[in-house]
Length: 255
Image 1 (tube, rainbow, N blue to C red):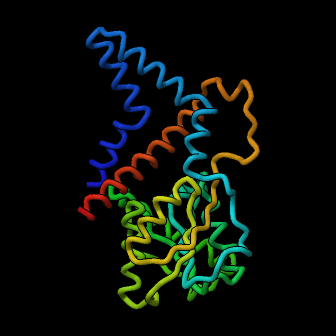
Image 2: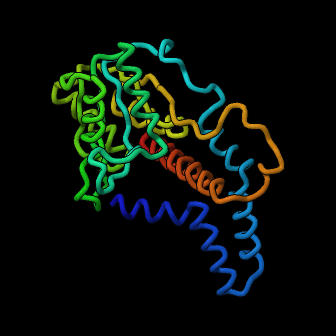
Image 3: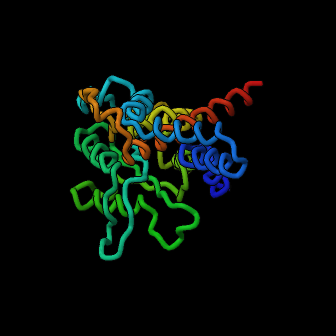
């Protein structure tokens, strides 16, 4: 099911949409889809446009200091920050490594007695060690006691992560009602918070991994297309699409 979801989503994202329009234009020999695809490609490749998309998700407040974060029953660190390569037993960091560092910082500040990592793993990567297990080993190496670390069941996406953490409550490993400090990328926080709140958690968001700096000035380069901007637009549109689907599902349940 998750494979089909990812495939359908990919077709609606900038890369899939632009490819579809260009292909239709070539096959049908029509200028409108060709021009539309080309214009969208240039737009999504512009740093000024991709930054605006990401900023709409991240907000303008910036990162909250740890000292201003309330206390909770557990710190929940969402996955998606490592990749597993030969010769690196604990994996190598990707862009979202701030999630792990944020969780460690919160725990050391005494904001919660438990540090919870999710066992993230895609269904078609069965040979990989679930990411949370690697993160737990890293945390122990940094001085976090093993008894202070919790791991959820294996989960393939944020919705499954929220449900897996909920099961820990049902098993008595987390007290109820549960207040959590949720640590994830700023652009991902809105959707992640909604999914955890649906599982009955009180969420204190701790946003990290900001994609756009608060002092980025607009220059001529901001309007010149580049590959990094296109990838950032793809990331933002994926999140906006998921938020739209989440909102639509909530409306259906209220009917």
